[in-house]
Each structure stands twice: as C-alpha cells, then as structure tokens.
Length: 163
Figure 1 (cartoon, rainbow, N blue to C red):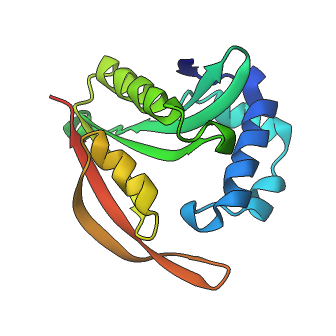
Figure 2 (cartoon, helix red, strand yellow):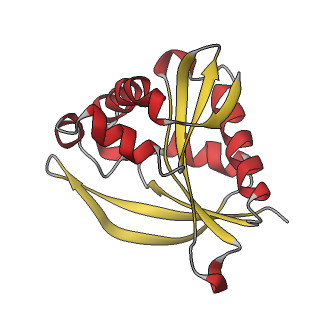
Figure 3 (cartoon, rainbow, N blue to C red):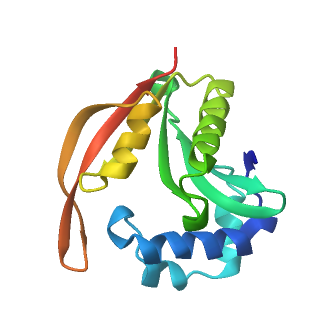
C-alpha cells in the first residue's frame, strides 16, 4: 500500500470511493451523497488539482482517502486540518487506515506542520478510538455541528502534536 497526492486523473476512482463513504456513513460527513452525486467528473478533476486530497492505493486501486488542509496564514502555518477520511469498507480492519494516517502525517511534517487538527462526529466511536491511537486528543466540542436526515450530531475537535 502506498499513499500519494490524488491527481485529476484519479477523479473517477475518487468519485466512486467518496460516494461509497457518503452512502454508508451519511452522518459522518458534511456533504450528503445526493449533493456529491450532482458534481461532474470535471468538478472532481478541478478539486483534485488543488493538491489537498490524498489517496491510499493497493496497486492501482484507490482504497482510502483523506484531505490535508494546511492553514494559509503565517501565524498558523504550523497547523493543518485532516478531513474526509475514509477507507473502503472491505479494507477496514486490515491496517489500511493506519497506512493512510501515516502517509497524511508524513505529508504534514514535510510541509512543516506540527499540529494536526480534525473534527469527528461524537457518535463515531470507532473513528475516535482510531484517532486516539494515532496521538490525537480531545480539545473541545462543537454542538449541533451537522443536521443530516433529521439527525443532529455534534463534533469532537481533536488535536495531535507531531513534535
């Protein structure tokens, strides 16, 4: 397995995997499957050209993804947010997610980032345990973060110090 920056040529694989994530876990992401399905392949190519989405590959197959969003202000250049993390259902429990997180951390460090931040739904206990294993700790809560299908969720803000 290897982790690399997704490119516009990965747009079809990205679309398929992201749609799986949004369909199987609708309350864990801010984007809904219906909202995402309206985007064109050209929209995805454009998004991937911005260089913020990373993929976990097993050969040519995209099995996981996550965004790494470095802060753009000089005073916050030591920080980056991780978002939209998902590993293909068939790959969960195989170490694939650990490989993806390791790749995201390596990329962050190469950018000079030493503080990673993320939000995770308060009812997503599996993800919370995963992030804790990777050095993230709870730093706060955002009540009423998302309303999806009539279900209100709050988010837990987690931080990892990479120094």
